[in-house]
Length: 569
Image 1: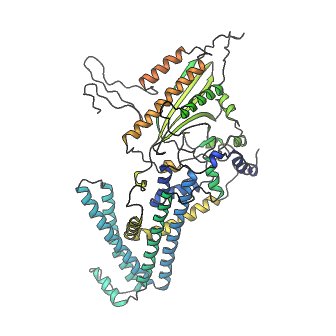
Image 2: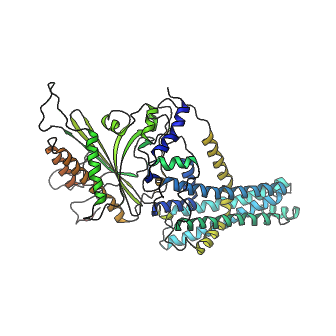
Image 3: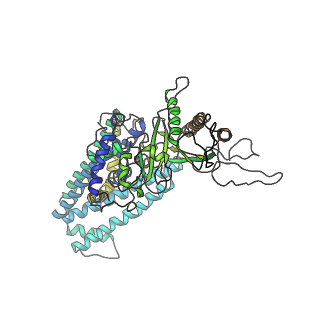
């Protein structure tokens, strides 16, 4: 049985030997990367998710590269986290100090913040209502949220006065709540300390807001050294995302690739040409699975060098082995690490033995629209039972969220953006104060979790080590904002599928009877749809009207009514 120490020692050694010049060069300079870097400074939820679900999970593998370098985004998320921690620490420290120095002044500060929140929520609610009445995009959910905030912050201010009065011990008239403030006014005289501490808190929030916007400018200009790793975890992420093993969690192996467009497959019995059967009656299969895959890869690679027509943008081909995180004893990113989990240790072995828990796929990936739209086709081949089995899975990674596209908006970049962001931070001052203990608590929790000793995992299945998500998945907008982005994804999928079928036919035609394959390929290319599930018939009999539709997420057909004039319903 392999010891935990030997496993730990194997990880950095394998990482060092697997790194290639292509993997360790400058980071890809594309908009998708920069948009997600910007997201870490303008979206607290995204920044926290990147840290907690990826960086602070050393016991889980890293999702494969898909147009965005995860280490770059995580590096910025760490910087944004530092700003949040500094702000939260200063605010919480000031409030604790004020409470120790003068509890009365502390209660005044809390009351002012509650009133501040009440007024800010009221103005925001009125603005949302006006936008909604004018037909602007202001969701009812946002207005309801603001209304609830108003309903909470108002009574909270009254509750603060009541609690303060009880602690101070002033006489109260339950029938007249306004008497609480009058009684407090006669019992306590403010000395201005609350005002001074509020100024310090405001100054902290405004300074952090200005620094955040300055970081955005550096991201846009590329002057931020974002390619530099700062610790061993980031280095593991940077190299692991380019590994030839995808160690996935849960059910779907294609983690980080987006949503499924479609999956189709076929099985073709093999009838070799020019070779007599063996004495036992079995056939001589004149090729191996890895030879077929090598031919497909070489044929597809030529598309990236095409000069007669526009090239497929950023076409990248790679052999990858997919294995569940439950079948490995530690987060595995490279084939050289598979032996510690008693798995096949080379791509060729994995291709020739498609009956083990680990499977080989040829990944064909196209990053278009400045890596905002990533189309990937996974190809799996197996020869079993004198039959060739081919499986094709097409995936689409939609663009990053529109809110992260800040570099073309002058209101988001430059001096005016800094002033506007400081104003927004000032309006949200109570929220920053309330989030301070939460931010610090989450940081402490993640540190404790990351350094918590893990029990030995030399037994396969004792823990799921697979990647759960990616920085790209966390910042993806499932609603494609541009019509041609969706059409391009379908176009590239169709092109790759057609080229894949052509290369398979070219390889097999001199070795086996390909008449069956030719029929299947013609059906696939011309029809554009291969049914992999149940077919539903809605029209039966003379005069009936039927509807035909592509089913499933991101299906490449449209619902058609035959009785209509070509309009989709």
